[in-house]
Length: 447
Image (cartoon, rainbow, N blue to C red; front, side, top):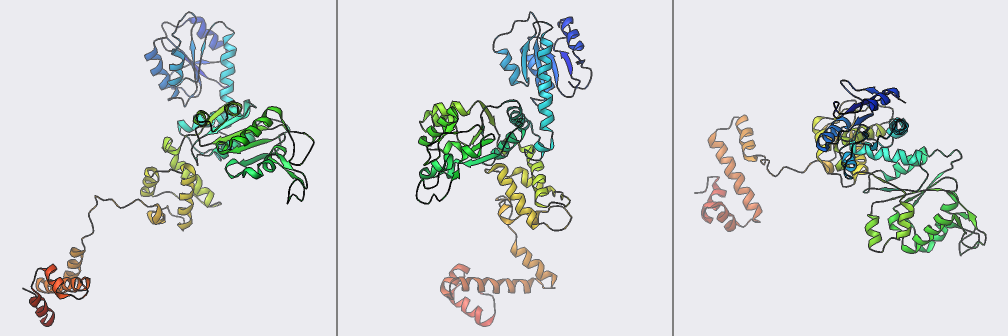
């Protein structure tokens, strides 16, 4: 186990033997700056303890195990408050045997964080925000240390399929086979049997050969059901039976086939609400939610926008140096909304990368017009008249020349807009019809 720290919330009240036991287990007493995981012996004064947990854990970013010393009685809600303020777990100290529990938790967390920092995770689930780090830790823990079904929740574009692929990659089964992906939103009910079970030759018109279905292809591997919330209720019943019994028949077949796969599902729907509305089977819901991973939307992890943008630029320009971002472009990327989440940001960066040339930074002109910010309604409109006067003065024109040119331009514009009708044009210019006619004949200003 890596060296970790421990300290007391109230050093004057902490049992000496507890600290000695932690020292004997290889933990160092904290002094000065702390880094990595650690143990906090709480005092029972909740405001003080919670504030200390929030600081030590950086609101859950760093692992802190809250230990309740022997003899300290806490209200039953206290552990939940400790967790809410940043503790990764809360245990009561009963004897020296508790050291083994402390070590087990710290070892597990160290393994998880080592995997989180691995190239597999860093190149797929990109981001360093606290919200994202907590989500990725959950994905990694369920992938490596459990074999039960996993449900991945999150809005469209948050990376649910990437998370499913990571779960399959980290699954420690030695004889693990393939990941099979099935998009439930594209399944046609009439052909669902063939999609799930496969079919025998001649099972129906057009079945010219044997086809393997998803249950067979995923045998000894992982079956990923994307958008599982879109499955019609009759298909949910079929899925539930196979999950429970691990057997199925091909369409047109008579023999039972065995299948054994890890199930990973994903949806952007609120499945609990779907169950309440009768659109999703409650028994299937409980079958697929042994573990739940929630991926936060991009608006809840804004500090990840620029790292993701650089990641997508690198993917769009393989083998080349990733260009810097002009400050105006950085500000735009950080301020614009992303209803499509990470997927939308990826598309924006792909469009920008396709316009960029050279080795210099990404500049505002590289941003396609469709991705630029809308005009500021409070910004002043360009002063065209002042610009025209400025150009006339630069040519050496005096006030008399400028007045004559402006008058001629005004008459020309209004007469053109009125389709040559001098009467209407005169009314708009505030002169008489005759004055306008004389002006057009003589080139003199109308009265």
